[in-house]
Image (cartoon, rainbow, N blue to C red; front, side, top):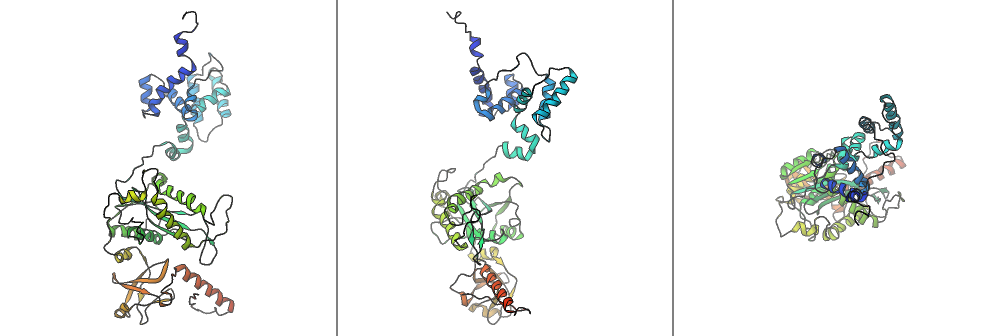
Amino acid sequence: MAKGSGSTGRDVASTPENKTAARWQVLRQHIEDGIPLIVLANGEGIGLRTLQRWCAAYRRDGITGLTPKPSPRRGVRTHRELMALIEGLALVKPRLSTAAITRKARAVAAEHGWQMVSYSTVRSIVTGLDPGMVTLAHQGPVAYRDKYELVWRRRAERANAIWQADHTELDILVLNVNRTPARPWLTVILDDYSRAVCGYMVFLGAPSAMNTALALRQGIWPKNDSGWPMCGIPDVLYVDHGTDFTSDHLNQTGKDLHFEIIYSTVARPQGRGKIERFFGTVNTELLAELPGYLTDGQRHPEPVLTLPELDQAVGTFIAGTYHQREHPEIKTTPHQSWVGEGWLPRLPETVDDLNLLLLTVAKPRIVHRDGVHFQGLRYVSPLLAAYVREPVIIRYDPRDIAEIRIFHRDQYICRAVDPDHESATVTLKDIQAARSARNRELSSTGFCGGSVRPVPVFW
C-alpha cells in the first residue's frame, strides 16, 4: 500500500516545508548560538554565500524567508563568474540601479557567450545579498557599526562607581526674566548602577562648564530632601567631548576630589544610552503634561511656566516619581538600588571645600569700607572688617546671587549678603535684565550720551 500511495520518503523530505525546516536548523546555530557563518559553512558543507543569502532572507522575512522559491526557468543557471559580477556591481559606490546592473551583466554575458540573465534573476541575486555587507559597502563602516555591531551594555558594580553627565535641550518653552519665550536646557548627573539622578541643572543658554559644575555640586553634597539620599563623590565621571566637559575647571576638580574623568568614544552615542533614555522619560512623561510643550503639531505654544517653576517640576518628578518606581532594566527602584543595604558615600570634608572647587569664580574684588561690590550690588558681613582694602575672590551660584562666598588666599572667609535683597532670590539674569531695561530707559530719555553706569532697579 505504501508503494501504491505514490509518495516516497524522498518526496516528503523535499517538500518546501521540510526544506525550510532544514535550512532553519542550520541557520539557527548562527542566529541563536552565535556560531560564525564561515564555521557553519565548513561544518555543514554548505557554501558561505548560500548561508549569507539565507541569513539575509531570514532577517528580512523571518522563517518564511527560508522557504525555497521556485525557479522561473528550470534548467537555466547563471554562470558563476557572471553571478560574482552582478554581486560586485551591487556593492559599488555610488549604488547602481537593478536595471543598470542588468544591462552591464547582459553585455558581459554576450561578450563571453554565457546564458543571458533576466531582470528578475539580477534582482533576486541583488536582494539576496547580506544586508550588513550592503550597508558596509554603500554607507561605510560607521553606519555598519551602528546598525549591526553588538553593543556590550556594561553596568557598574555598585552605586557611585560610575556617574554619567550629559545635557539636552528640553521640548518646552518657558518665560525668561524678560517674560519672553525661551527654550531651556537640562544637565543631568546619573548613577550608572542604580539609574538614580544624583544632580541636575535647568538653565537657559548654551551648556557651559558653570552649569555642569552646579549640577555636579548638587549631586555630590547631601540634599535637604530626606527622600533624595543620592550624594557623594564618584570614582568615575563618564562624559562626552563637549567643551564644558573638557574644561580645565572640571579636570582640576576631578584631581582635587580624586575621581577619574573618562570620555566616551567620538561619534559613538551607544555609550550614553542610559542617560539618553532618562531624557526621553522626562520629555514624554513630564514635559508632555506641562503648558508650553513643543510638539510637531504645535511648534510655538504659549509659555506659562518660569524657569524656577520648571526647575521645581523636574525635581519633584525625579524624587517623587522616577526614583520611586521600578526600573525595567534593574528590576528595582533607583532609590532602593542606590541605598542598598546601607553604606557611606565618600564626601568632601565641608561644603565650603566643595564650593571652592565648583562654584563660579569671578574676578578678584577689593574689600571696601562698605563691603564688596559685584554686579551693581553691595555685599556685607561683619567678618570683612579685617580685610578692608585686601583683594578677595568671590564665588557665587548664578541662580541666586543675593549672597556670595568670599575667599582670601584660597581660604574661605564668610558668606556676604546684599542687604537690599537678603530675603529674596536674585539671579544673575535678573541683574542683567534690569541693567538692560535701565539702559533702554536712559536711551529713550536722551541721558545715555555719556558713559553712564546704570544701577539695577528691582520691584
